[in-house]
Length: 638
Image (cartoon, rainbow, N blue to C red; front, top):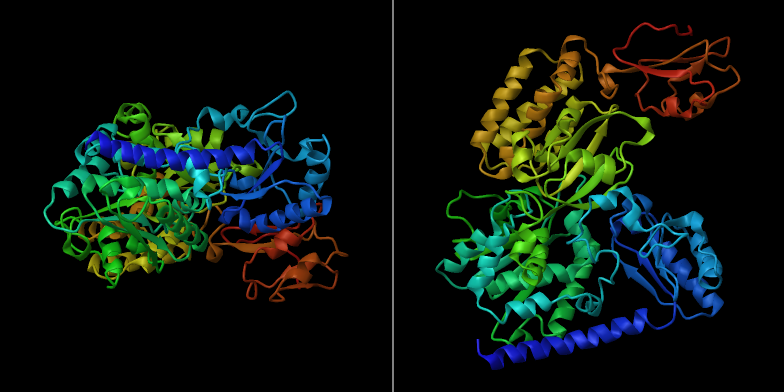
């Protein structure tokens, strides 16, 4: 590229950047307080929209100037709704579990007064003697935010916020050099796909760049469908321009002129923010013809997937885009050579593309210096299940499972004992406490029988039955199977039937051998990753929790008291309070009746084992017990 061409690109970008920075400074340095409310899906589910309205109404009522801005997810989902208040000459303070009444108090007592309302403080951006900073949290020792850096701190619907934070500078830099050096940087960085397979991103780009055929396509895969996973959704909701910038750089590197942003329709807020981001990017000449005054032409079409889990597999996704049923096909040829409409196509995950601007800005060596020898950079996990601090976490590759769960996630609630962590989505594996010191990276997890997957991490405690957990996840993948492969279609159904029998006390010891044999056959005979990995929950639970399978089969007992067919509820007569009818009133099937002495009795034929009686029983009595197997206990007669 000529010097004139480079000057045109930098001139166009510097103009955008100057306007954005000016707008940002006018906001944060205006001498007025600013309120930012986390209004991603997690915040909205907790009541963030009511908090937003309460802040705005109270500010209008008080007649003060104070912008109230919707931002994305900070990752502290356990403390939603979140609000950050920046007040001149004061640290920016983040408040957790805010409700409309607390919002009114914060306006009156902190914005109008000088009381920071410490009882509601979660942490501060800049700590002082009164307010602890987020960097003082134990999790801060382990977190390393790259992809989540902007999430919760900028308005995802305002492109100027992203540009002012350094956004699109990597694109401007990329457009001044030729595609091959960009591909070499990505290869040197060691970036591997974050969609689950972990294939080298740079190598995939290089294959497509060298492939014959025009036009070439770039597809961003936002079809995240794992139970308990919400990383891609949160990034698209909270920082959509980071994904667009990475997509633009990837398209320039491989020589694509058309791209697709594939997001499942079940993510309406992510779709809304992505659509707005595309509109803003076109307005700023970051999409379309002669991007930033260069010769690069590229545009993106937003496509909403219908929610089929199998469409996370790249060839099934391509079939969906082409208007066909979402079913995978044989590979090779791989999409990088023959993909969408038979043309060379690169498909990258949301997180993979969002890493690209960071690598271009900071260099391949910088990124390669984070993580392990074979797994570079950071990993973003959605911590869910039986863990205190649920939400999004981003840690360097190589951080151990124990550190993620007990340091970043603050451990198991209610003094329960950790049992397992299910990692890698429904096709991942269930790993026990004995492997908690395993480093989180592609190779180590695979050796343990699990997988990195897209980043879901579901924590299980002593109340979870591992046989039922395996059955639950297999039921999900079995229902999501497209049915094309005989092994996947019928094999997963047969395995599910065996697991169902075991959880209902109908299992036989030979079933365990049949499960292992079927699992190996399904892995070997399935066409795509869904079928090949569907047996993972079974294989890992058999490997690490075989004693629970044997208890279900031999003793007809569920050690975790989770399988309904192997449990029963009883009321202890020596603890039942005659004047209390709490359990009677809550039983929806009228299975509980008092006898002549007013001692309650459960009719086992009517009981549906919904657990409401045990929950309703006052703790001072604690008369309702749950046992497995159903056995003789001292119960009252009718």
